[in-house]
Length: 206
Image 1 (cartoon, rainbow, N blue to C red):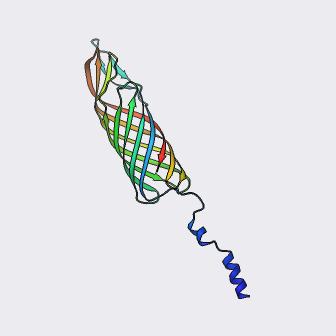
Image 2 (image 1 turned 90 degrees about the horizontal axis):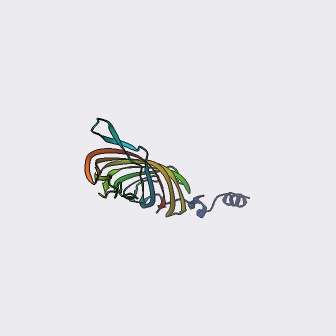
Image 3 (image 1 turned 180 degrees about the vertical axis):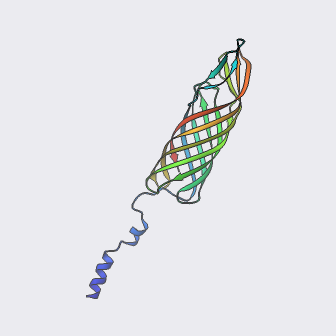
């Protein structure tokens, strides 16, 4: 009777393999990680500091641009949900005026260990301009870059333990120290300008 009782209790317990295997696919949560995203960014504020004409009337500069390119981050996950990394973006403007390379530190947080998990990022760094300008007679050129900071929120879907997809939306601030504006190909003003941007991204986490 005792043997039967022990056998029944043993049969009711999960096997050693079951104890070691999680009930869902988990993305790796410790060690080095990398992210490569396609990034799309467009500015929210279109009017910037302007100039006074000969009649004393102020004219604001109006810009509407989009930036497309790649963002790459490499870093270290020091706990199950948190990571810190170094990254850069290569962002190109079709008109050439606002093309730049932000270099930044990223803090990343994942909120669950499930296959599908929400995450958020905070980035802080410096944006380096290409120094190019559009070919129009009245042109714009970033003469000197500046501080950039951003936040984003999204979801990560694990395809395997070491490969996942990222999708996010966020906000990016870029404070440029000097933007050159020219008329008839002659520089007219060089002023600091602040840009507020909304950004979207889709990529791979590994």
